Length: 116
Image 1 (cartoon, rainbow, N blue to C red):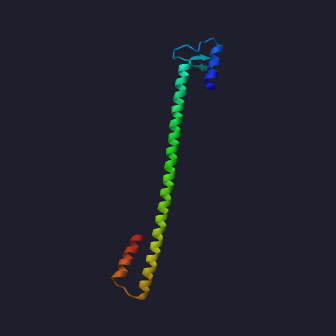
Image 2: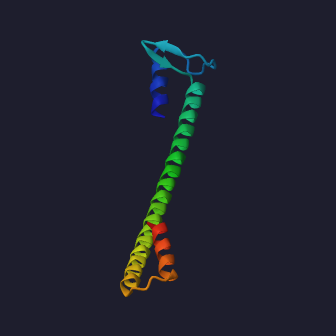
Image 3: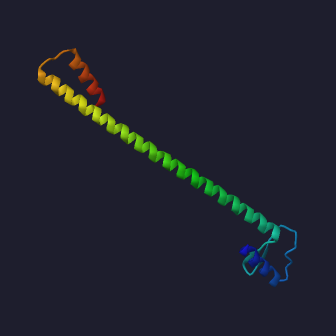
């Protein structure tokens, strides 16, 4: 609204009617002056752009939150796998220390090798 008042004052001070219906702008002392219709269109475009930017910001923030949740979930899964790997290492070491090299131990070793 302040923009319109400024241009309206500029137009009135230079004896150019603000009721002029043409879409051409008039240049006065390096300042472009627009009629009400053009200013209204420009304001509408700026509002539409601003709304789109706000929508994009909300979508970006939502994506950031989702990515953070995924990151946390994957980190928890990784920690779970590390704990399982350590349990298998302990179990394999215990079985090897017992001295029995049966098929069960080999299966555990194969599983352990796939996890590492």
